[in-house]
Amino acid sequence: MRSFDTLRALLEQRIATWCAQLPANGLYAPMGYIMQLPAKRVRPVAVLMAHELFGGDAEQVMDEALGIELFHNFTLMHDDIMDAAPLRRGRPTVHMKWDVNTAILSGDAMLVKAHRLMSADGRVSAIFDQRALEVCEGQQLDMAFEQRNDVTLAEYQEMIRLKTAVLLAGALQIGALRAGASDADVERIAHVGEHLGLAFQLRDDLLDAFGDPDKVGKQVGGDLRAGKKTWLLIRGTERAEQQGRFELHEELALSADQRNVPRMIATLRQLGVDREAEKEVERHDSAALDALEAIRVPEPRKQPLRDLADLLMARTH
Image 1 (cartoon, rainbow, N blue to C red):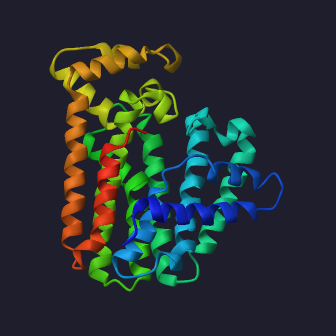
Image 2 (tube, one colour; image 1 turned 90 degrees about the horizontal axis):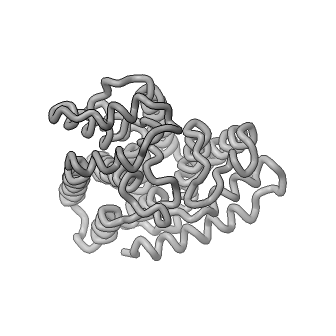
């Protein structure tokens, strides 16, 4: 079994080749730009890892891995427009470097290219289409939550399951399916991906509020400034009400550009919400490892996925 870093290096070569072959015009330049930004490549490497978990050779599913990464970057390109985000991984977002219309159209074309890479196997295409649609459903919920003040933690978790976790689950499913895994194991590996994805997103929430901006590569507290209903803000509002504190409500009553984000972050720390979120990350991490344990393959093959779980738990950006 090859490590995450080894598989990621193979994938980077495939991405570099793909980008070098793009036509030299305005539709494709943003694709090459966003695909070559610094990235963790967790989802596409998950395709390769799952394929090798069930005895396959990662080189045989490079197209599917690339397709997953293209789709992921398509969603980022459009998400950045919706969020009016100026930075992505420490660099200007596509709509800032070019313009909104270019980013929309280039993102649409990336989606088409991703689907082409998934079309050789009807079973793979079906999983990809299902997961891609779920991601869009999750994004819609995320936007709808911005207009509500009564979002619950359960609703938020379902939203991030759709928006973030299901794509990692689908990546693992596709890799496993192409290696000939049983239907039962394809389902088990999906559970691994969903719980890792939930842990990943909750870690992202924590980093947005409490991370080092130089490592995170984006504005610290950006979600809080925007009033996004993250796990931290929902739970923080609950705890503040229980303790008769009003700092968060006072800041949320202001316009985004007037909010005192450091005050909001300090309040969340005082309420212990950061520690609660850390425990929730650990819970999902443990559930992912339990699901992996139930898959009956030689134990050494599982180690790269265990290492990936450890990497996601410890990440600082």
